[in-house]
Length: 469
Ligand code: ADP
Image (cartoon, rainbow, N blue to C red; front, side, top):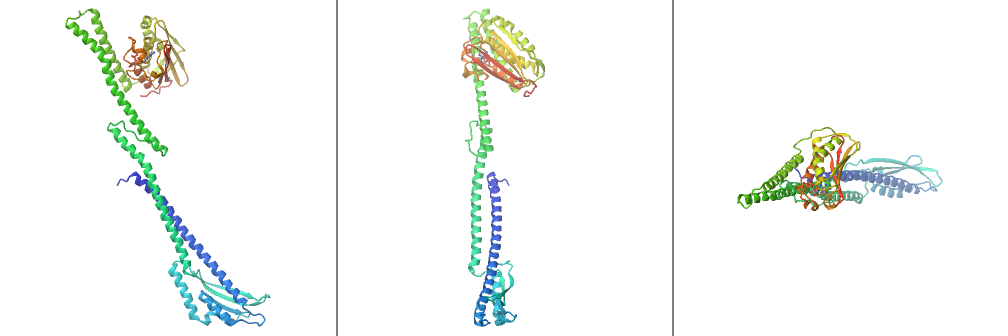
């Protein structure tokens, strides 16, 4: 049978307390009983000694004799308390003996003590003690002995038993109260622990059916539970933003394709209706728009492949400077058209990575640097490395990127306001591809930029391949 976490936690916190309370109560019970028996035994021993003392004070030294009436009264009084007394003179002859005097009574008194103790305190080890006290006169001469027999421990009164019973009752009440408090605290603690877990389970279920806006309220509590709730919240947030990105992507794609398609269709319509002559300029306008559409679709395919890592990674030892030089030379014509110049700085070094993907990254960055820089400016690609990382910086003297937009340019279809006005701008997919590729290679990309001064894109790659595959 499945038991709830709350039940299990309550049980596990109540059980040790129950056990501890039982152990403490039982040991306190036995300890107090033993101590009390000990106390009673000491009291009885002291009483027997004081009886002997009282008897000796009775001795009349001047008349060298005992007051028999007194001894009788005193002996009977001691017997009623459970002490059987015999007084012997200095020669050892019996002066007064309780058993000689009334054997039946002595027997009866002792029997009643035994049965009372067995009844009220079963299990107590009641012993018959015999003690002998030497008596001396005021001047120190021996005058005889007192023999006293008694059962010990002997609880003199009901209140002695009552005292122990009251103590036992206090122990039972304290144990019950402790247990109730422990169970209550256990249930409350279990509720506190179980609440965020239940909330996390509920939230995970909601998330699984696509309700990404669900959030667990932040609870205070143990670190692990806080981590759990924030992990679930983070997962919901990530899925929500992924979902939003997907939705935005669809509208963005539609938006990007609508303009060239509308242009082509209006050109073709006008030419078909004979409104426009199908001149070669107009046809090449249509061709350009078609190329634009093909470019967007191609970029989307590349982005998809990069993000899904469909093309896989082909690692080999690549020489970084050589790659930069070959990328720069592939842009030679474009650079020339823009009157721009590209310089490569830094010694050549090799690292293990996917050369084609790196080429694509550098190509996109260089293409952007050319597109977003005025004529006559220069572009620098600089190389550096440490034992662990290689860094490639692509620096331009272009239009720059406003600070607030620097973190957004790596998102799909994002274009800064500065670049939108430029005819040369693309669809805003290039940097999303770059970011996906760099991350595939196990690195990261950052940007620093100042409006109208230029931008620096820094690609960091691990020297040893540690790409995500
Ligand atoms: P696009 O195809 O529009 O260039 P990218 O994804 O490559 O798309 O770039 C996204 C946006 O980032 C660009 O539209 C532009 O606004 C900005 N950007 C990228 N590179 C640069 C750069 N070197 N200088 C200034 N702005 C840049």
